[in-house]
Image (cartoon, rainbow, N blue to C red; front, side, top):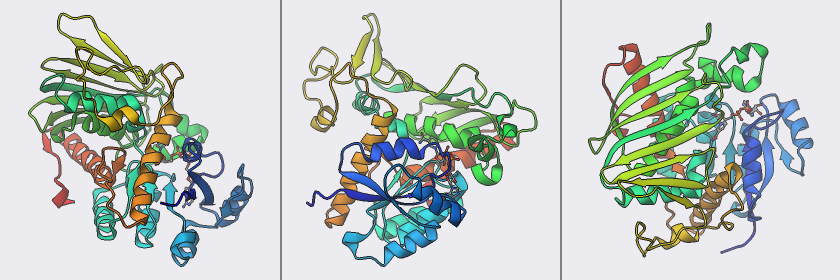
Length: 398
Ligand SMILES: NC(=O)c1ccc[n+]([C@@H]2O[C@H](COP(=O)([O-])OP(=O)(O)OC[C@H]3O[C@@H](n4cnc5c(N)ncnc54)[C@H](O)[C@@H]3O)[C@@H](O)[C@H]2O)c1
């Protein structure tokens, strides 16, 4: 396998954009990937100016159409190895479809699209091309999320009974969008954000975390989408009571009006033998509670197999995932880097004509993206019926 770095093209990211920055740092983390091109802004003139101002040299394009058209005609070894889509939600579907059709792997921000119809079309296109496609559910990239997944899915805490999966923020507790702050403006506009504001933006992270850690799916839900800030067009508080595929129940909740909470994503899983707790704001450890035993706190990098709770034969790939010693803290950027690292591995396998997994175990895939949008649509449906129990759409219906 070649050790040339993978070349990445950005779609979105100019003029004070937010999430492009953690991504571009994470892309460069290992020296095996680098950003080389970008269509950074909707206005072609500004897009080129922004590319010129980028902190290291990249090839600027006036639009993502131009970038994809140029790239698709290049010989495979000169083409972008993948594109990263970091535009607002309503500009995910079009560039993603165009890149996939051009045979360029895609790492796309969440939520996948703004409606289920588009999500279904994208899933079909990705499967038809058999091409790597990742969705940026950041928090799956924490090592402790991998570890939580292992603990719950291997049954160490027994049968899952109840899950509380949440993402709490307070930054939209006032009408911030009226100040013109770009990130608030599009997130509160249904044409750009989709049918649910808070749910689409951060509720999808809480749902994905529940599914990733437990391996369970939501089968039915009862939703309350509320808007606390007067005059706001979309929900800023999202509370979903769920039935899960094993008969357990769950709360998937998100809020943007809980002053004091910053990016407080977390999960608590109550199993028949014990409880697991994890919070992204304190991401280096998980706590395990077993009946009548002292609480156990497990730190990334300091986990001892065969300690009386963990089995001796822990999965090698989990234990070996590149990491730094415990006590040198990993955080948000490391989580993004782990996702890009695993996506890179799939892209390299795909380029070599080998089977690649893209199975959702290392990063969210296009099916996970579809499920996020299906969840939002079911929540909107339930909410209009005053929280009536509503079935989750099945993939076929997409
Ligand atoms: N995974 C996470 O943890 C996480 C966190 C924040 C945001 N996000 C997601 O990332 C996306 C971007 O969010 P953000 O907060 O960075 O938004 P932002 O407003 O800061 O940045 C969006 C960028 O897209 C550009 N853009 C818009 N239309 C474009 C077009 N047609 N062509 C080229 N560029 C275009 C804008 O100019 C801007 O540079 C959203 O989908 C959001 O949901 C994910």
